[in-house]
Amino acid sequence: MNNVARWRGAVALVRDAVEHGSRAVQRIQIESARRPFGILERIPGVAEPTRVVHGVHDASVTAVHEAIRGVNVVVGATIDFALRRADKGSD
Amino acid sequence: MRVYGWGTVGQKLEHSLAILNGVLGDHLARTSNGLATTLSFVHQGAALSMDRSSLARAIPRPSRRIAVFVHGLMCTEQVWRMQDGSDYGSLLERDLGVTPLYLRYNSGRGIAENGAALADLLEALGDAYPDVIDEIIPIGFSMGGLVVRSACHTAQKEGHSWLSRIKRAIYIGTPHRGAPLERAGRFLVRTLRNVPDPYTRLIADIGDIRSLGLRNLGDADAWHPLSDWRHPVPLLPEIQHYLIAGALATDPWLALWFGDALVPLSSATADACGDIGAVALPPDHVKIFHAFAHMRLAHDPAVYAPIRGWCEAAA
Image 1 (cartoon, chains in turn purple, blue):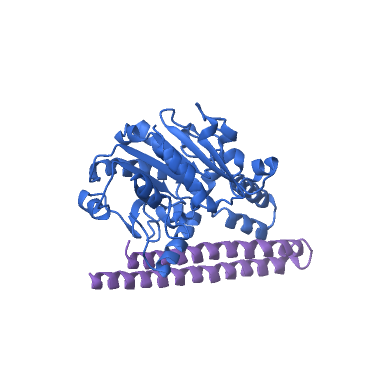
Image 2: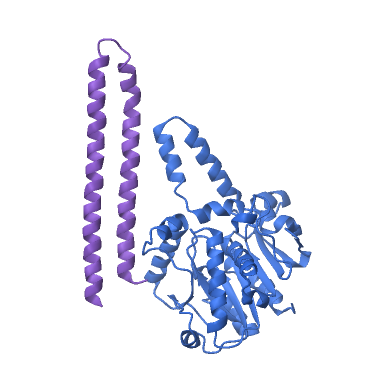
């Protein structure tokens, strides 16, 4: 196994870690917020606006993590491409 | 033959990769990650090609007896190295003229997968070795012993010719009855998963990242179709089996339960000379070292003495 293959492996591993880490944190943030929102959503008067805020919260959390994962894929693919080119150049 | 002599930085990197492979090796292999270790014999830190000329270059004076060293979880062949730079293999070569070969493998893959790969490698070795092979002595440390057992069973199932050359096998600190620490970890993860809290479940998720090889250790899962928690693959009756175990405590009960801190004595000695499957082990096939921690068993001159004795004896 040459060094470039190992570097590419390390990049792939970091990419996997960011992907899985982001999904785990997203799930935690949404699940943690569900409890206080759930309580407020049972109180007459504030229930309706709370539902709206809850929806906005979940959507924004999802959007942030989707963005993180998207950047992760692009950066990972770019580094991988550069490493492959470097490997071909050294042959 | 010595396998060492490469730089310290290289050794540290290889050791770090071995730990990574032990923890995530099944994921690395599944995703064809370049960090995944490929199962091979290594010479001076590099994988040996299974062709006659490469082997002839690496082994200038091949003997007809080979000792195959199989390391444990999260290790490389460096685990065999003693302080003076020698190892059981180089000492066997010096004392008995046995040619040592050191295996390196991805210890995070399932034990059965590594066993099957080792079986294929040994079959290829028979064709590529520069001399006739009269005997192969597998010497497995910790998980390596289970990989050896699994390889023997694969060879029996597939009808490999190398199995007939195995007359004796030596297991050092091998958890024949499984490793309770892994079972405790599994129980802890299951408990955490049942707690209705997202943070606790995250901890359980992190705990569940551990590799298939690590999980297999809990039940000594050397070959799936035959394994259950008490009886993994039975030892083959055609082979003389020798067991070495360590015990940190001198108290017999503590030693039995805690053994060398990772493997209990009852697991490493297959219940103190009891049978594993169909084979009853004579008492002189089991050697227990007191005040020995698990890793020390792989590289201590005192442990070499019985290994030499067993290799010297007519099989």
